[in-house]
Amino acid sequence: MLETSARLLRLLSLLQAHREWSGADLADRLDVTPRTVRRDVDRLRELGYPVHATPGTGGGYRLGAGAELPPLLLDDEEAVAVAVGLRAAAGQGVEGIGESSVRALAKLEQVLPGRLRRRVGALNAFTVPLLRTPDERVDPEVLTELAHACRDGERFRFAYRDHGGSTTRRSVEPHRLVCTERRWYLVAWDLDRADWRTFRVDRIEPTPPHGPRFPPREPPAADLAAYVAKGVSSRAYTTEGTVRLLVPLAEAAGVVGPLHGVLEAEGDGTCLLRSGAHGLDVLLIHVAMLGFDFEVVEPPELTGQVRELRDRLSRALDRADGVSIV
Image 1 (cartoon, rainbow, N blue to C red):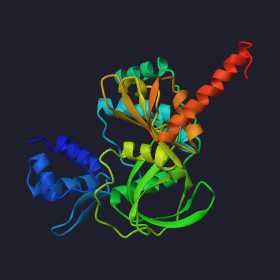
Image 2 (image 1 turned 180 degrees about the horizontal axis):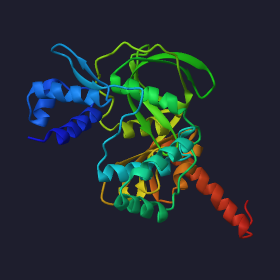
Image 3 (image 1 turned 180 degrees about the vertical axis):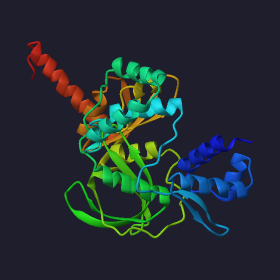
């Protein structure tokens, strides 16, 4: 059994890691009785931690928000990860996050033990970021509000601006936030359309109040990153196509990002790329610029575009070589 001080730290860590615990689960994790858990919760409250309790068979304990942010418990690896992440986050993807990241980083580095400060310093000094500036910045308050709704299982209401500038009112059951190098997306069940939808977070304007709570649904895919990638790289366009890249999947993945298309393993030396564009000609140029040999799988019309482009390029080469074209 853990000593009291160590047990309190362990209890606090558990409360920070999970939204709500039953008394029995906490007692089992700490190897103590439920009565000891109640006493330890009272001690945390005396120390200023806002631990809320819900009575009844479905009740439990959760760490609430207080007037002041209580200390967080981080192990060595978590502290290094947070420090490096804060430095990398400055100016990347979330509006206003740069200054906040710098302030938080300054506070964290001030209390880091010397051994961890040296590790963070080495990583920062010998790492050169090569990050792309996002197309649209996301309001951090909107991002936080969405994250809470996903975590708490609460319906979310918002005004959504589509790519044409039109605004519609949406009521959804939010499931997960998915971020790419350039954008944030919300995967949610659209109540009015009775189907799963993907929304760009920078186009979302919350219209509270939110709620009520809802039971979780089976997600639209096990791999939500691939699901969103397919949606934004294929389904969002009027034209879709599939080509076989004559290179291994690992090599193609180094060039094809999630916004460019969805890769699928096929053989040892080939893979499939499913992508979309506003026309077959644009899709062909996109594939050709990847720098890989390829074969058209579908649609058949894309093969015609390849022949047309081949002939046009051949005529351009003939003109460059001074060959008369009849």
